[in-house]
Length: 121
Image (spheres, rainbow, N blue to C red):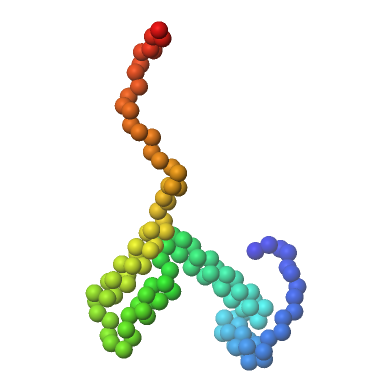
C-alpha cells in the first residue's frame, strides 16, 4: 500500500455501520481498517475469479444455466449431468482455439526446392 491516503467521507445505513463496527471489534481493528480490508478483499476475489475464468474458460453461470434448462421437476440423471458438463467443456475449449481467417489458404506443397540454379536459355 502506498503512503498516500485519500481522505473521504461515506454515508452508510446505520445497521450496516453497526455490522461493520461489530466485525471490526471482532477482528480487533478500527472501523476504517475493517472497511479498507473488506474493500481490498472484494477486489482481490474479483480479480481471482476473472483470472480463474480466463485460465479455465468455464463460466459457472453458463454451466448452471445449462443444468436449469433440464426439467426442474424431476431429478437430474447422471447422463444428463454429463451432457451439460460436456457442453460446457466443449464451449470452453472451442473459445480457446484460434481458427484462421477464411482467406488464409495453405500454399500447395510442391516438394523441396532444387539446390542447383536453373540454366536460362
